[in-house]
Image (tube, rainbow, N blue to C red; front, side, top):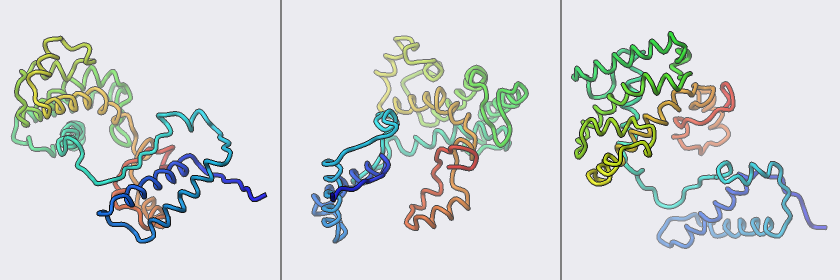
Length: 271
């Protein structure tokens, strides 16, 4: 007679549970600042979760809701720590993407302007990009878009690998020859590496240089062709001025970083 029906989404339920855990984490640490009503709020959340525990659940799209890879909700708590391998983990992709932008802008933004070898490499990459437009392997509008991944791996990747080599040399990686580094970057898979090269990487390189080499390899083999196939405001994008104004109106406490965070789009101009 006193029962009711709660209609909600999986994300809301998970957010509720994770918020409860976050509050317990704060309450258990007396040295951390907290809101005076936090203990009261935690008790209310516990009552709500108890209702779920004692009730009956009817789920739609159970295969999606219980899918371990599609239903994950990241909810970080605790003290903030620097990202691993910072700041090189974002300086490397900035260097790599500059080789793509050079074809349209005709100038580089990274610190190799005085290097004749760097300029030569960028010109060669620009030639291949223009050839890609002619072969319909690349799309020019609304920006450069990769249409044929085979063209990237066969024509662009070897040149971009040389461009990456410039950056690696500037970081003073030692222990491997230039040929060994290039072979490591361009091997289709780790299993394809010669055994002596794999042993050299493990034995001669420090953890920092191992991360550097593996990050460069991941960008060349996977990340770069992936992002080049995305179309701005269609498959991903950041908030436009109108989007931002609507978001702030709905949530005045929205973090400022949200304005510069690229998110997936479900369609044209639909985040």
